[in-house]
Amino acid sequence: MKQINLSVYISNYLSKYLPGIAGLSTNTILSYRDMFRLLITFYESELSISPEKIQINNLNHDNILNFLKWLEENRGNSISTRNIRLASIHAFSRYLMKKEPSCMAEIQKILDIPYKKIRKGSIEYIDQDSMKILLELPDMETKVGLRDATLLSLLYDTGCRVQELCDLKPIDIRLNTPATIKITGKGNKIRIVPILPSMAKLLEKYMESYNLNKDNLNFSPLFQNRMGEKLTRKGVSYIVDKYVEIAKEIRKGSFPERFTPHCFRHSKSMHLLQAGVNLIYIRDLLGHVDVKTTEIYARIDGEMKRKALEKGMNIIPEDGLPVWQENKSLLEWLNSLG
Figure 1: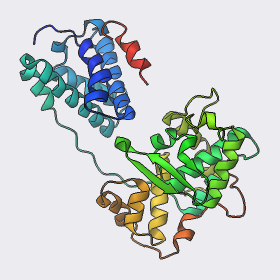
Figure 2: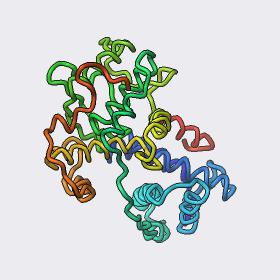
Figure 3: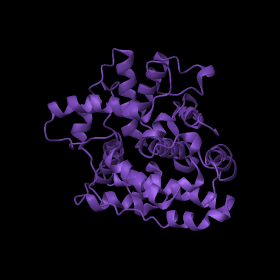
Figure 4: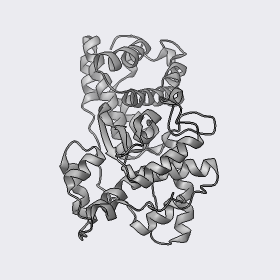
């Protein structure tokens, strides 16, 4: 490979190609951004190549293999996360191949790096009684407790993904009957999810408490941290972990060893399935493209319970609120994105 600085291509890829030509969503572009941040960190810390000196010939088969190994052994990344980073590298490599055809031979070696097979694990979820206990834990008498109660309840009631929750804005909430929430999912696909009257009532109280019912705040983050900034996925995980640890002591043995925010989504799906709700409706609630993805819940639950839809959905009390670029500054530029 010839000596060509890589930073220009990274900058153009992230700021022009992905958003303008490929039309990818902000969250997807940020995922690519994160991969480049890690890659640059790897070159600097493990190969002693500073960001402004990274050349295209440094992007080769052996270095990428070592980078992937570094992700798993030094960063503790799972095989799934490792494969996601590799997919981003493959996509960028195809872009480079078109820009610098003279580098095709080495780039093809990168494209030949295979994904690791992932052993399918079990779907972690909890029963409805355990979910009730968990959602009742936040102290509704405090503003932070009110926020946490709303956040946990919304994670369960809508079955939304963590990033979907973080991206919510007041403009997405419809509190008039029938109350609904507009959720923007993967690939900027929008779905409208109905919410129960009790959930709408909780949202209304929360939004009033945080003045999020004002028109000038329609496009502010629905959930914010103490600095008034958009709550991140890490922030949501911190909140969930805090209450799960308490719930585990109250209901010993009922929670999986690792209960993540995504477990709310799994739990909601299983509870609806056990209530006899058709997979097609669960698919639409979750925003799955193919019902085959949703069928995993049917395979897990060997004992479907035929209950009314409302009984399957409503674990929030009806009689009240739940008590629930181009140089050394490239790395800084990557950090500033988003």
